[in-house]
Length: 183
Image (cartoon, rainbow, N blue to C red; front, side, top):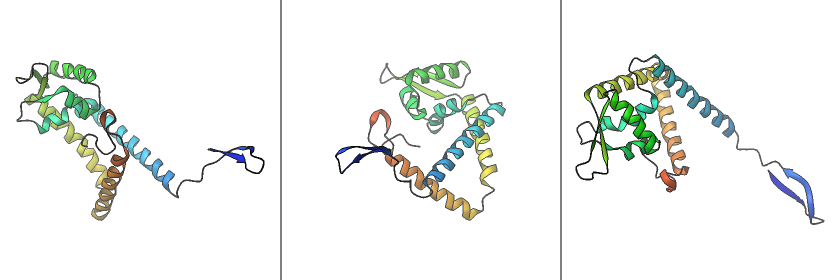
């Protein structure tokens, strides 16, 4: 809303004036995107709830970078926390629980004693892979209903939308838009 003034008399006007209508279809698209995100969240929660793997979506998000570092020395807690978009203390608590379950190991960095490095155990890697497989199967079930041409077109538009949103979204700790963590 914006204030309208009485331009002839220079005094106050009749009050707030509605902003111009949004571009055609933008509100419908925004609502459709919201419904998609909620449906995806419900689907993931249902998969986790039905799974015997015993990992939550938050834990999967925290552990996912470790799957890419399977042969490395491990990743620092801060990096895992940033990737999962949780605080370091929250990540530390989650990792303590996962360590007690035999999913990860933690150790001090040989280069910097202040830093804790985290690695997946063999059991942890198997559980993470099983959870990711279950999640992907649910996605395939839904997405296979599109024709190949529809899937290509939808993927192109989703990549485009991701880029647009990333370009206007501030990165971690107030860094400029488009500089956030990798998807």
